[in-house]
Length: 155
Image (cartoon, rainbow, N blue to C red):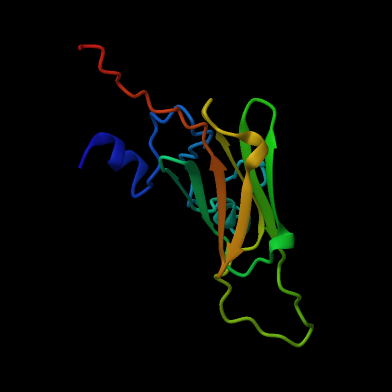
């Protein structure tokens, strides 16, 4: 196991990724940890770390976020100045009834916010988002460089 993977555990993010704006919290998982918004508490910090995959295809940058239980109205996708893609949302805490007795609370609630710096080839005016089965897919088309065809000049 490398030093980086032992420090970061099973995180799939790359500390050397110039496009990532993730903030590593060395106290993540501790009872007193704080999340990016500065509020303490495990219930917020758990959901605040919404897992997002980013892949690049020849045509687009594709982001997939697990947001189970959220409606599309509860998730916001924005492109900010400086080519920043921001994905945010909030899962409300379930209403507690006076006579309810909770035995276990494992599902997280609270706000989440993730930001990614998009590369120069991203078409910011053509961003599309769709949600299906608790997975948000954000597609950012790329400027495709035209193929250069060789011309035979011998002859």
